Length: 180
Length: 180
Image (cartoon, rainbow over all chains, first blue to last red; front, side, top):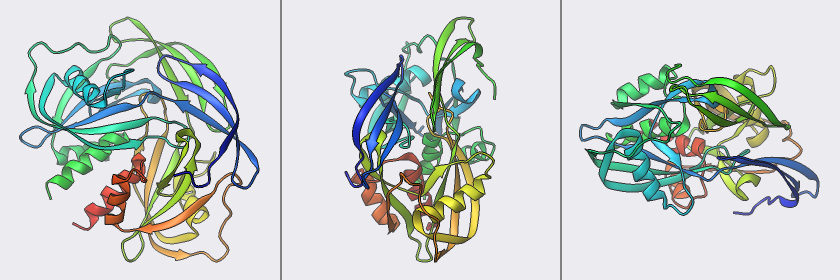
């Protein structure tokens, strides 16, 4: 998958933060012209479509500073260095929802913002959920509220723009598809 | 939707580019503690689920420097200042695919990376496609190749990770759902 490849002529590091970093690449286009690409590097993330026995989707409401609002999303979190995506998925599910799961299946991976970022999300499906007695704590700067919603409630929350992110919109549609 | 609001104490502008900008906000968490948020600002974008009369999805292959690979995606593009999303959608569809459309319907909006970016994508469905004789030119740094795929081909391309972005994964699932 290298069609129309853009060769890097020069790469300038702009910022290195605790979550993301930013660089500006000078590139050579397929026609020999030059252009600039502003690129955010991100460690990657997992997200979990956690389905209860009565076919509800487990979601959490949390504040998203980037959008200056709270959003209802499926559990998700950044990959830690050296951690397998499966382990991140199980950990984030437990931290954010208090659920362990007997079944964790890899579904697919997608890039979230290929125009400017390398972030990918590895999507998992969790079933066989059970409440963990002494759940792992949230990150110290993380505040979430748990909800369990039907497909119909999910569609209503999308219509009201309370579900307002790509991975959760995908999850609602995926769960609807399972019932067909 | 202000639950768990994080108040901005200080905001530091780090970078202003031609597509994105970056800032770091010091915030006050709901428990009174402080934290930092690294935030990318983006003008927002549209994406178009363009469906042919024989129920194929119109996609384009293009190189994505952030991921150092080409990807097969539904037509999409950034909002221009003052441009209505509907107009951006019609323009990007024509520029990237050479198709005009008789029907353009708003579907929904989603944030792509709420953890670190404010980018939202307004998703449209285009039907009644027709080839435009003198199509609008692509941006000068844009190179794309057109394909029209069935739902089954879309699922195969997802399995092969040639379709590898959230909006296009959503589009394939959405088109599959229409056939049910």
